[in-house]
Image (tube, rainbow, N blue to C red; front, side, top):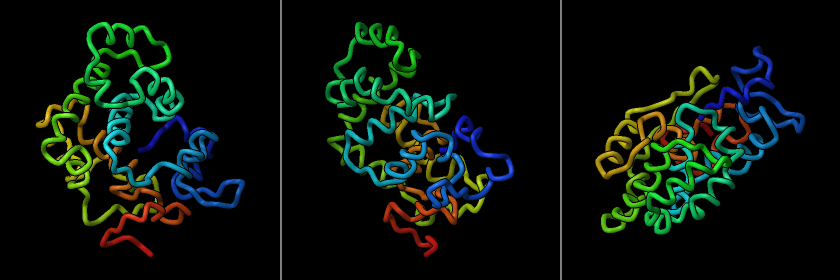
Length: 215
C-alpha cells in the first residue's frame, strides 16, 4: 500500500529508500507523511489479522480506497466503523436500500454507491463462506511462500500472481471491488507479504515466515 499523498513531507531525494525519523528509527517513506500514518505504520500495518470481522473491515476499507489515497480512508475510519455497524458482517448483510440512502448522505465516509453496495454484498458473501471454511481460511490460503524484498519504493510491487488468484477467487465467491491491486494491498496490510523496505525497523515485525525473509 503506497499512499502518494503521504510522500509530500519527505524530500524527493529521500523518498526512494528507508527514511530515518526524528526518533532515530528507519521506516518506509510513506510512514512519515503524517503522525496518523506513522502511528498506523508502527502499530498496525503488516500485522497479521485472521479473524473474520477484522478481515472484512480491511477488505471493505481497501475497496473504498480504490482510486483514492489511503490517508483519506484512514482519516475516516471511525466514521466508516460507525456507518457500517463496526463492520460486523452479520449486521451489514442485513442492510437494505434505506441504509444505502443513509450512507449516501453520510459526509463522514466515501459516498460512492457502487462501493457501498459492494460492501453490503461482500458482507453477505462473507457469511456464505462460513459453510466453506470462512473468509480467513480463504484469504490466507493465498499466502505466498516468498515475499518481496524491496530496497526502494520503486521495487515494491502493486500486484502479484497470488493477488490475482485471490481476487479471482473472491469474485467467484460473490465479492466485488476486489481486483488484484486491492487484493495485494490487503495482503500487505495483514502481513501476508512483507513490503517494509529492507532497512526499515518494521521489516519482519509480523512474525509471518517466508522462505526468503532476510534475517
